Amino acid sequence: MSEVRVRFAPSPTGPLHIGGVRTALYNYLFAKNKGGKIILRIEDTDQSRFIEGAEQYIIKSLKWCGIEFDESIVDGGNYGPYKQSERKELYLPYAEQLVKDDFAYYAFDTTEELLAMRERMKAAGVPSPQYNSVTRTTMQNSLALSEDEVQMRMDAGETYVIRIKMPRNEEIKLNDIIRGWVVVNTNNMDDKVIFKSDGLPTYHLANVVDDYMMKISHVIRGEEWLPSAPLHVLLYRYLGWEDSMPKFAHLPLILKPDGNGKLSKRDGDKLGFPVFPTQWVNPETKEISSGYKESGYNVEAFINMLSFLGWNPGTTQEIFSMQGLIDAFSLERVGRAGAKFDFDKTRWFNQQYLRSKSKEKLAQELQIILKENGVEAEDNFVETVCDQLKERATFVKDMWEEGKYYFSAPTNYDEKTIRKKWKEDTPKYVSELKAKLADLSDFSSENIEIEFKKYLEENELGMGILLPAFRVCLTGLGMGPSLFDIASLLGKEETIKRMETALEKIN
RNA sequence: GGCCCGGUCGUCUAGUGGUUAGGACGCAUGGUUUUCAUCCAUGUAACCGGAGUUCGAUUCUCCGUCGGGCUACCA
Image 1 (cartoon, helix red, strand yellow):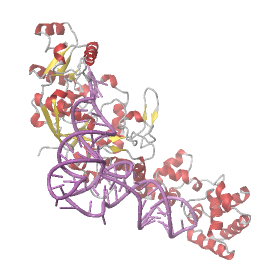
Image 2 (cartoon, chains in turn orange, red):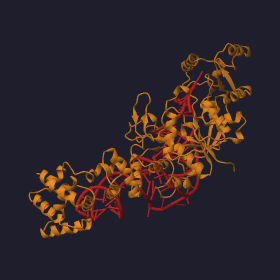
Image 3 (spheres, protein in one colour):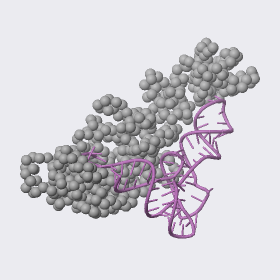
Image 4 (tube, protein in one colour):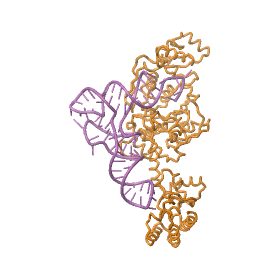
């Protein structure tokens, strides 16, 4: 069997959204699973839709995702260039060959003429007019015009496009890896432009020529390409490359959570969650769209979540590393139906990864957030904080937001807890407890707990009476991790100080 | 409208010509916990509809319906 070579071929018309990332991911997983290669090819044949920075965004965001290419504009390779605008001159000869072989033709029609034709057809009762075997006879093209006329127009410098000459009533079949046999009759296909008047090919031709030249073995792309796949099959056939035509796999689309339509890059943050892997700043409007990276998602959780949107291993295992995904992946286990994006599940994946991380690793990440907030803390201290907080966090930033009291004394005290737990006698108990704690030489969590319970016993008090009050003194909150652990970590001096401050402030 | 592709709990999905239709997220309840979270246990809830094939269809076929995609000198 020949080498597996797949490509991810985005067009630099903006940032890549998670659907595109998933397509790249599946290509990557498939290639690596088969010991093959993955190529990144930039499809920039539409110069009018070029967006500044999009290409760099695509490269950088995929890098963040851990999707590494074997060949690309940055990694090089033996089948370059890997950007279509740099391959420009390659395509015309193939288009002209098709004309010569009577599989394509020149067309001179202006936009206005095309529009007029559509209007005319609509008026005549054709609901969706096409440039096809019946209408082309009435248009300005090398099939309807005389040879002399065509030559004259070309000599005069008139611009033209090259259209494929769609045959009549032929069944085009293709065996999609995910969908099985797909059959389309050419009567339902139109004479697509394969080469534009601006000297560049359209997607259809460029894609076929490049895939052939780059020896692509499998085309794995979104389902939105399925309708034009028969056209691509025809192009391979007409170009004489049918024997080396890649296998096709059309992926189900990622749908919006409400089920109305496929996820689109225009959705930005409108749906209540990021649609981009990393943050994107619109170069024109400066509008910022959030990314998973900046929102605090672990990259492995993000990839793990994406991989499960349309694929599953057939077992109950849900947590996979990238290598695990590579080992388990197969196109046969990719589903056929579109998947609605599930934001809750995404958060759950992140939580799973957060938990599995060591306190050292988490502390490193938390330190970054602490520094951003002007907090200086010892690594050891932060590690213990992470240990105490990780079970109740979904994101690293949660540990900062919910654990500020580890780094500075509370400035206000939770009203509800005060109302319910701060009784008349409480100040007396707190100050007595404070005195007891002040005498402790071993300020370990266990020791504090013993001392605390001893005090409760002596005064015939229940945990529920004094502990919430104690907690609110130290943290200002009514909930949180083990208070004895917190007190121990804060240390005796700080604990006593906070109790004193609280006694002064509460009432 | 035309063409193409789909349809199992609310969501992601497993699965089979005969199953108590399984798991995960979410949600709910109980237990644990000083509290919240965690954790544990339990529960909740699905084969789009109609024909046909068959002893038997969620599974196979057809029709309908619903959903999605495409329908540009965009990818």
